[in-house]
Length: 159
Image 1 (cartoon, rainbow, N blue to C red):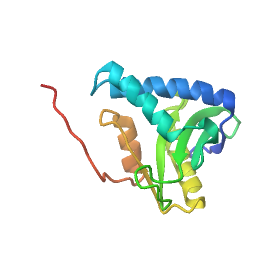
Image 2: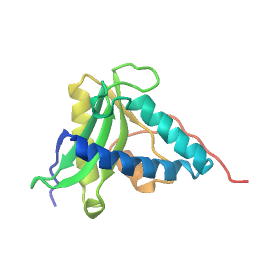
Image 3: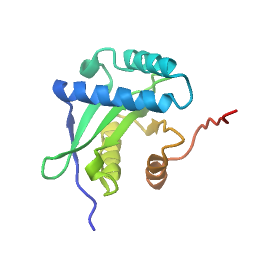
Image 4: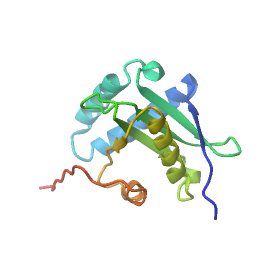
């Protein structure tokens, strides 16, 4: 079977509002596994204010919609064209990659990731970094099979 083809395009404002609401909810749910819910909501708010202070117009951030060969929206990606801690542009940062539910497990994640890598390369990045929650086994497997390596790791145990 041939891998699916995707095209990335800039996210529109109406798409951004829906994307942001859904991403915030998923982010808070993931954070709430390791911190109180109110702290998770506050961290999500602070992170959005830090990384997307101007929404779609935030400099060095690309919010992208992935479309199939038939023009159907199959997913989304948010890539920063600078490393978030240092601000250097030799490393781009994948803040989010989402494949819509009906298209999961059919190669779209890999296709979107490859397209994002091309965006990062075209912007001059030599590396693409990302964080992934430890419980997100499907994402971890995707990144590993695409050549990503662990560069840092946090661990915890519930007491």
